[in-house]
Amino acid sequence: MPFFDSPSLELENIEKGSRVETKFVKATWKLRTYLRLPWRPLIAIRGNTTYDLNEDYKVIMHSESWDVSALEAIGQIFVSAPEQQKGS
Image (cartoon, rainbow, N blue to C red; front, side, top):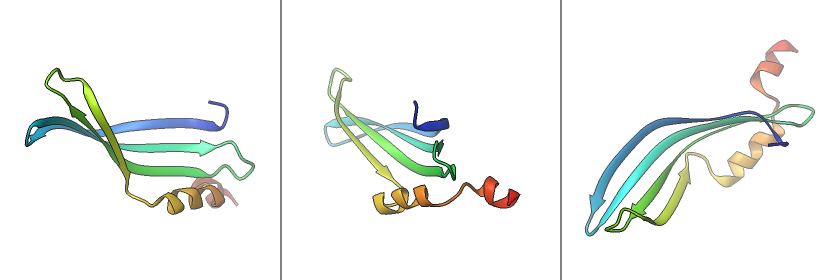
């Protein structure tokens, strides 16, 4: 990925469940990557992804949420990575 530097996606938890007639799988994760910009900003977002499954266990819906707003996530682009700030 040309724009990302050292990307990682850590799976923190995965659970299965059901509601009414739909089964689901919910994954909680943490995404971290530096961007290849001169100030090397760190993007760090926690979130979860839910997959609703039909009776054949095929995905019928995918939904995702983050622990920050889209505006807060974009705002991380304009901040230097913490490691760089310590070295200054």
